[in-house]
Length: 255
Image 1 (cartoon, rainbow, N blue to C red):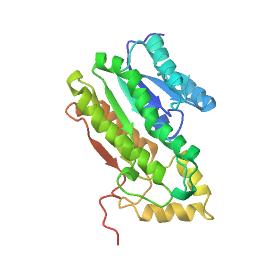
Image 2 (cartoon, rainbow, N blue to C red; image 1 turned 90 degrees about the horizontal axis):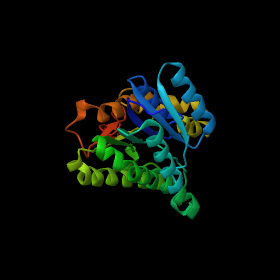
Image 3 (cartoon, rainbow, N blue to C red; image 1 turned 90 degrees about the vertical axis):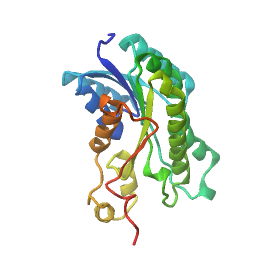
Image 4 (cartoon, one colour; image 1 turned 120 degrees about the horizontal axis):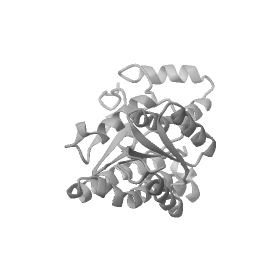
């Protein structure tokens, strides 16, 4: 199955932003490796991409386990031949006040959102250095500003920006560019879980949309197109950058 196409790995690729990134790249002649812990969604997406004439490979992956990450990268190299883009998108939220977090909660968030990105980069970089490829990390505006009960998530995303900056400097001489996308509110599974905790989810969507200067919650495709740009030749002089995609939230002065 070795591919002559360029190859992208998308972690957390089976749903939400990751699924949109997979579809965006697969629709532009990339072979897309879907690395996800959800077998059902992953296999459905793999089949859908192939039915649409694209190239995809689902690999069951837990980014918190080093052996799983190493095996995923080895399989990509074995079946697709090389890696051109790594999109570190896998992430979770556990919403608590700091004193309410268990150590296990804290570790789970940091291990998924930050350590997972480190592990994937560690094992993909030898191939990325050969291909002079690109890493795009999906961070969050929570790396810059904070909401209640989001400290672990915010810390993980701020750490991801520091990792992005450090890798950009370390691997620039190898031609490997490393950048981050920082989404605001995006309509994903995580968003739906958050909305389900409210008595009137539709009213919450309306109030959230009104607080965003562009007047709407983002869609996964809004983020996927920016990931594509940062990985593309059009961004060949961009590395170590953090691109905010939030509908104008961070540009707005609070009343």
